[in-house]
Image (cartoon, rainbow, N blue to C red; front, side, top):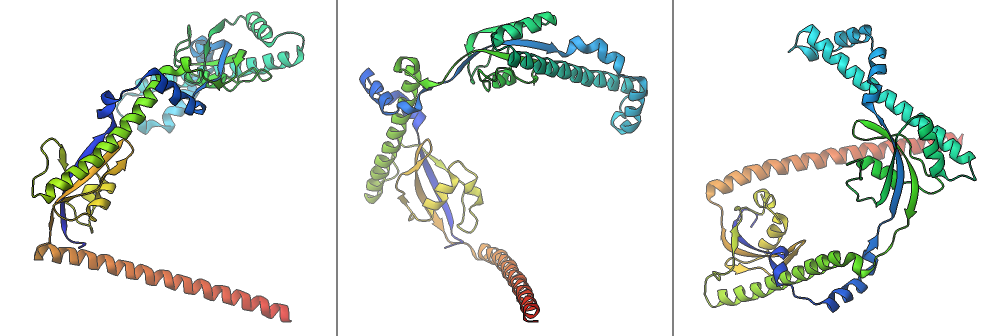
Length: 360
């Protein structure tokens, strides 16, 4: 049986194909929402002030810090990386890279120093709001303050007037009213320091706030149910047709899967739902259809079209392969037993040695 070839067809019932068939009314959606209310939360929301430390603003200082000796040293150490350009080109490239690194370093140091100093001032200024302290300190040091006045949350992709700054968003959502300042945050060729100005805690959502999401989830669940029901009904229908010596119904679309043997299921396992198809196929008789098998996005049914015994040459080939694998397995078992024996002997010697010492 391990060497028999299986030729199978697979009928797939994908929930996405049943979405249009889902029918519902407003009461059903509200009922679904109330039963699953714990799934629907409004995320915590945040507002913040931000100071930006652009790399480019440190370019002049970085150029002064990068020396010709550094460039020459870097070139000599990494000469093999620049075989496709002459020495001048290579050194120009190295200099630009060193300047970029220095700009980043200077911006980070300046931003972190700003964050530490403003946090100290906030700790000391108990009677003054942290927002005011942050803005006053920034303006005193001639830094522009960007006000995030629109609510943002962990899913925010675009900050008004600042752009896409995922790392800044992440840092802001980790702030608390009593810990309102971020460290220096790297994002988009700059470092940022943010100060939390307002926060709304996460809460359970109202139906009106998540109606679209409820609609989507309800439809997906119902479509999944429809797909699974259709697979079960179809399996029964095909079984009945085959018993009456009829062919597969033309309205059911089946996909041919690669031929496989139980001893070598690799060709079929690579396919979508391949392992489930393999497991069910080897338990299904020739010219019959399996029961419906649930999948993550619907269900499948398997029709075993043909089971073929191996030819003599195929059998001999498989026999040689299996014999080789068997010998390797036997050798491995023998080796494992040998190691186990050594370990047991070693433990026995240790225990005996300890016992002899204790008896002295």
